[in-house]
Length: 294
Image (cartoon, rainbow, N blue to C red; front, top):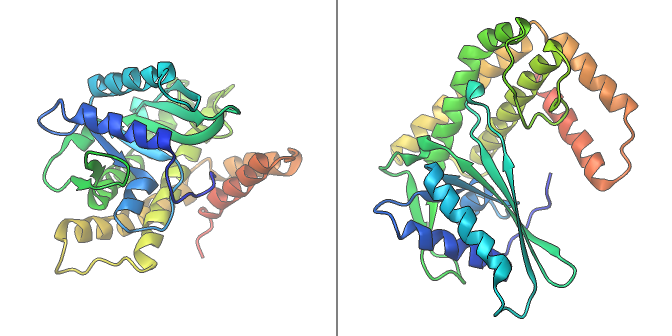
């Protein structure tokens, strides 16, 4: 829901330099750029939103957070800087990694320069063709990115897990087994078992939405031929199948109708007065539309 950008501020370039400096401490890079910025660097899209980062272990994440915090005390800079760091909980039950939300701001008015979301996900430690070294103007060292093939593989793992476990997870929540599911847009503070299940369905829809975006990337001029980049072709074929499987699972879910009624009621009764709220409303409508395949 953020506005796309095509260039980086000085503070963001400085943060990227910090990441590569930490990577230099390891024999294999532990911090990889992913998300829309990594795809932008791989010429798969023309703009990006905030910068997503994967740390393969907690130690590298802590190093990064500690190092970025020191940017607040940089007295040599003529431009005021602000680095705000918040912890975002994950949920092991649905394989959602924990994360840090980092806001980079600069200037006298504290205008946002860039947002960084740092996920801690050991699955990205797999080597082979998982990482790419890409030159970014303004950053001395090559920026280490997760390859698109590997990004698809991680998404496919999540799609497969949710499809295979959605019913059992629903059953656990119906039996009052409590595990907190964060980042659900509307159900972050559930009051009962139904709302916890709705949060689960919202997380599944968010994953499905991401899968739909990846499929659209392939359609919009980025197809991979079967005889080249074999791993990416294989993962893209899996992506199509797994996306369809999860869509069917959600469409036939026992709580699907009650979930839609609850969300539609919120959409019709809640005032949306500013730009953020209007964009959030449209985004939620797009998520619900995934339950109604053409």
